[in-house]
Length: 636
Image 1: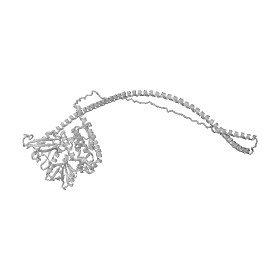
Image 2 (image 1 turned 135 degrees about the horizontal axis):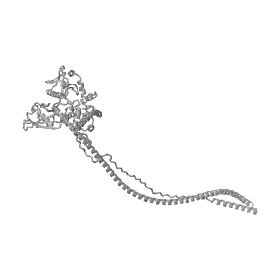
Image 3 (image 1 turned 90 degrees about the horizontal axis):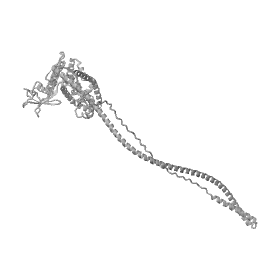
Image 4 (image 1 turned 120 degrees about the vertical axis):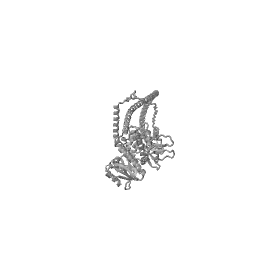
């Protein structure tokens, strides 16, 4: 009778949570942990089940792994009081050494991707800020597919949790600034399928110092507090304050047996000359987890170094065939995509050319309409200009007549002026003569006045002589009378000369204002020429997609070519990624808030300055002998 799917009231209700789904089952009360685990693996289609386990919280609130050989109900699984359901989480319990070589199925890669991503975001795995941005860009690629400038919208990445909180708190940067940097990496990724992007994510994540490490608190014989790190390649010993750089390490091929007695853990080494490696743990539950993880990782470590089983060979062959098939389909898809893009480009060019021609036609019709309007305007202006010309001619004739009249008047005025000037000259000459004659007459008048005075004096004398000589003769009286007559005549002459006045000449000239009117309006018309563009894009009007039928040889050549191109891309991009990470670290360094740095951030900075990484540190630690490393641990 099958232990699954029973509808009796005694069945166990089980809920199994993965990172992207929830599964519910009804189990028989006698169902074992292996029965439940196999049921989950079959349900999700997982064949690489050796990496995974079912985790739960027991009745003592301890995190435990479900034991496969015991019944589910006998393992102190906490039962939810609300719905009487046993809740388990399907997690990766063991990690591969190299994800690109060991992980075969897509579902396996996907589950590892989801778990590692969640561990990074929850800061269970420390990740440097620049590496967090790079991994976030791959996570975006998984979620939205290859970057498409048509579908991408600003702010699209702001809603999701892409970076650890420790990274965002450490820098004074807005979500928009982080989005810009994630988008820069996102745009640089070549088009890949989801499983390829997830594998790239895991290949970067496996280089992180805390990837695949299960930490447990321990002490040595000196009671120094340390961390024990159980990994896929061995056991690492860490300082209490440093989970990044191990103090020493022991690989699984150096370890023969692991056991514990109460709080004491004893690790027997392969080298019999070396004393046992002993440490102490304070919790029996933790001791059981350490032993379980050590056994599982040791078995997988040894299994990797043996020839693959038939099951794994079959899985790899199927995965390779599936990969080749998808690569061929992807090659065909890329070709069809290129043809489609070419057709879309040609269609775009044709639409652009059509739009250009339509614009030209619209511009030509507008230009024609404007030309007609301009023509009518010019006709109107021509009529106005003709009227203005006629008016101007009339005004010109009037001005000409007026000019002739003014010219004749000017000539008449000139003649009159000439005559007046002549008269003025004659008058001046006459005045000059009169002045000269006046001067002469004044002189004569003065002379006559003097003579008159003399005559008066003579008359007085004559009168006195007459009185004296009354009896003088008639001859003397007659002479006196003659003299008086002469004086009277001279006085009359002087009065007539004084009455003469000098004529004044007044010259008046009148000028008439000339009326100047009219003008010629000049209008410059610029002709508009429209040149129709040539269709030089070479677009084919009868484009039809071709169907490609590939032979086996062509398919093999395509596969080999894609593998070579992918390897070449990885080789070139590795150094480029390192340079980009360094550039990003320099860009965000000015925004760092030093006081928000954690202890791991400070240790990571020191590691970068020293030029160390995860692999160089382990290589350096393994260079010493096993005996020396055991002695070093005991002296810590």
